[in-house]
Length: 161
Image (cartoon, helix red, strand yellow):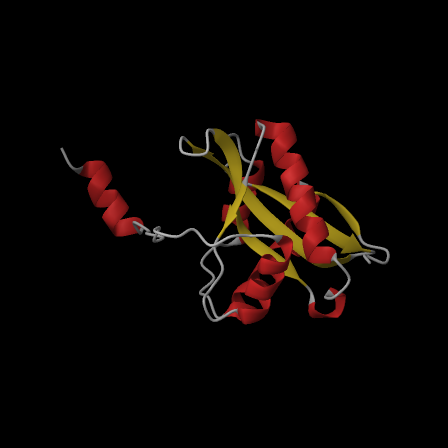
């Protein structure tokens, strides 16, 4: 299954591994990668952390990473976790590591803020990821569209009367 991988909550000493793994994820799925190591450090370990990461390591190598944040849903009546990033190294795939990383994230979020559901977004073109999530029991949310208010528009909203 996970042959020798240690999964734990990431620590500041893991920043270089986390940064490299998340950059590989962006490359793998063709996403831009705008987060630098300083942003990651502030988000995970700053005075007001906005995210948590779990890392799977074997020796000095990162074999997988999950990055997640709290969400709250009045419709679900519960806090949850939003998994923004899940990456497993190609050489570690097929051994249950993705499932184990999601389980570690869910356990950590349950301990931290009582998470009762997990939410994520999968790219339409990422068929292997979709098959993986379907096998775990994830469901599409009918009638919802993901929207993003990017930086300049968010700044405009924040400065409007």
